[in-house]
Image 1 (spheres, helix red, strand yellow):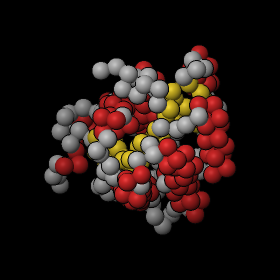
Image 2 (cartoon, helix red, strand yellow; image 1 turned 120 degrees about the horizontal axis):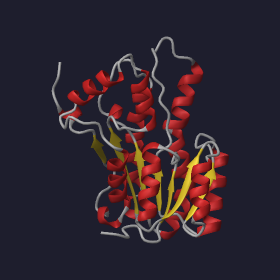
Image 3 (tube, one colour; image 1 turned 60 degrees about the vertical axis):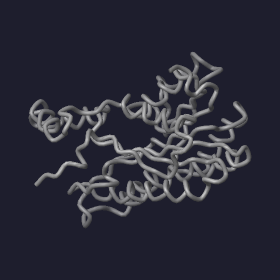
Image 4 (tube, helix red, strand yellow; image 1 turned 135 degrees about the horizontal axis):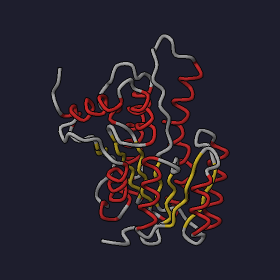
Length: 256
């Protein structure tokens, strides 16, 4: 089925690599008008948008800074007249010992992983509410469901992001706005590849990770993107305030 997002205007934050890039490219292929975003200039995304100026735009904005987010939304509305879909994918990993964590690490984790999503939603909501239509998908994490030692405070932010999803989904359900989230497990993004490469024996570590997954393989960004596509489309019009796990079943499997 092609054209599942025909002429929908979609903002995809953190869309220069990994899951965000896969989402942006899939949405473009499915007929959406896509706004690429990163906190820093990305030549690849800017070039991709420049090649298709009628259906794509790159906007540099740090989602943790409300003024930059508001400027991004103003630019999008001036260019395309509306926002139909928001994919809050921008995020950062902060894994540290709770008692060794600095105040800056705590603040930055929440500023990007939680407040960043809220900043974009808050900027997009007025125009969505005015039209009585909007689909918002927050990229959460399996860390928002299960606690992995040594990953503090990232799971705290992701639990809160799922809470934000449910709260806003209920708050605006009767006004045409849907808010859902996706919780990926281990996905072979650039950051996952870099982490594996940093291990003493990358091949052995990858094999170990695969064996922990019931499906015996690591997920791909496109698999997350297809779930985002479904939730962003009108096919999912009766799905609201919920979270979908994409982790190959790992979080449901009992282990020591």
